[in-house]
Image (cartoon, rainbow, N blue to C red; front, top):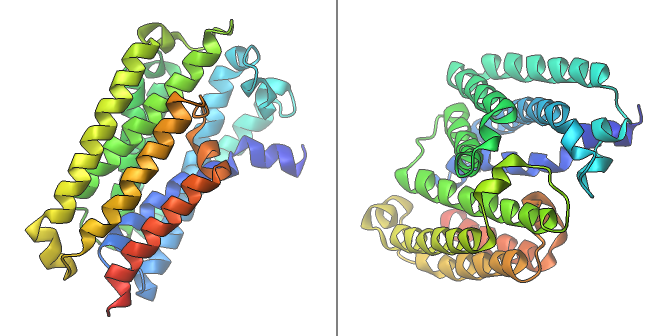
Length: 291
């Protein structure tokens, strides 16, 4: 097995999703404290190992369907580059390593890691075939990442972070299903849950979630509680980047049909990357630049 096949098997590029663990400490303006940053980094590694074991499990279950997919047929297990037996061994090593590291860091992170694995096991074998439930569980996965970040750093996760994380994850999940649906209509049938969707429903759902997400973010920006906690009334300036970023993602989904893989869309779209970096930069200046 080549290094390239191994990295594709563990989906190293999807580790970017686990940056959500840094969100609680970042918004609490505590990411510049070395003990907090160190805990967040170790938590990131632990969750990434667990997440990679989940990806391998999903690929093992989906391999027969993936062979009929124009893109997923190149995945290591589906293509035959990695045997199922070797994949199961790597899965076990990654999962045990992640769980042991999580247990060493804090009991709450261990519990969240086990819940994440349990939910995704149910997702791989059963729940991913149920429309709406499948994208809701994608949202739960991102929410668990944020909760894991709060647990490992000892930072309380606010209600705003919970709501906005779940809404953002729903947008990503629905856009992913839309991309898969577009490919499926070209003659490739590979996901049973797609029978519960159609383009009008997905387009309306993405639009509703995007609208609610923007409204929730604006409410967060103008919340007196948040302004008092962060010590500034200028958070609303960051809403510009959020609105433009969501519009760009909607353009990728509804106009260019390029969101079957949200991670790939983020890693390849320069416009989206610049907006995200500008938003992080603006928030970082508001939280840390005035200290």
